[in-house]
Image (cartoon, rainbow, N blue to C red; front, side):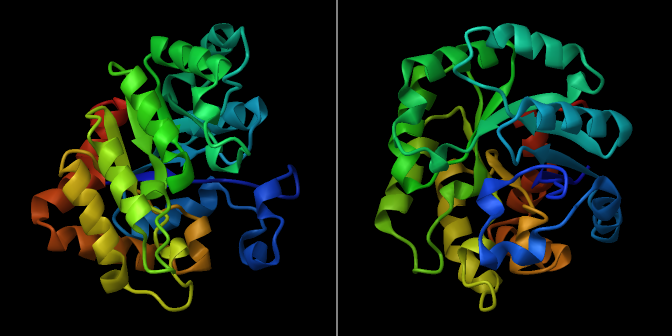
Length: 282
C-alpha cells in the first residue's frame, strides 16, 4: 500500500484560515475536497492518505473524522485539540467515539505560529500531551528551526510516545539551507521516537525554480539523520500546488528517495506511515 502521509482539505467559503490571508496564497484559496483528491491519488498510484489539520478548531477535527468515515482512502486523521484544556481526556474520548473516530491517529498544533518558541514546554501543554499519549495517539510537530529545541526536549520528556516531524521542519531551501536547521533536526532524530515527513519541501524552495536535484541535499540529510525506517512521504496537497502539480511533487520526492536506495523509497511510501501511526494492515 502506497500512502500519502500528509494532505489537507479546506473550504475558505465556510471557515477562516488566517494563515491563508496573504496574496501569494490566492491560487489555493478555494475549496479542496475528497472528490478533488481521489482522482489524483488514483492517477499517481497512491492507495491511501492521511488528512492533517489546517485550523485550530474541534469542528474541523470532527469534520475530518466524518470524511474518514465516508471515504475509505482516508486511513488516518491528524486533528487538532486544545492541549491546554484540563478536560482534554474527555474530549479525546468523545472524538474517538464519534463516526470515524477510529481514524484519529494524530494531533497537531501550529506551533511555529506561536510567539513563544518554547510553547511546547509550557506546563499546560505538556499536561495535554500526556493525555494525548495516554490515548495512544501520535503528536505531529509543526515547527521550524526556531522551535526545534523545544521539540527535542519534548521528545526526550516522553520517550514512550510517538512523534512525527512535519515537512522536515521546513528547511530554508530557497535560501540555500542553514547549519542551524541541519544540526537541530539531527539532534531531534537522535530521539528514536520521532519520524520525519518528507513533505512540503518544494514550497520551501523558489516556487517557479526548483527540481528534484535541488531538494535532494535536504532529503539526503533527513535520511542520514532518521534512517530508512523513519521517513514518511507526504504530498502536502493542496499547498504543494503553489510549486507544482500532485504528480510533479510525488515524482520529485520519489526520485530523491530512490537515489538513496529502493528500500528507502519503498518504506517511505507506505510501511513507515503504518508503523508511526499504527494504521490497520492492508
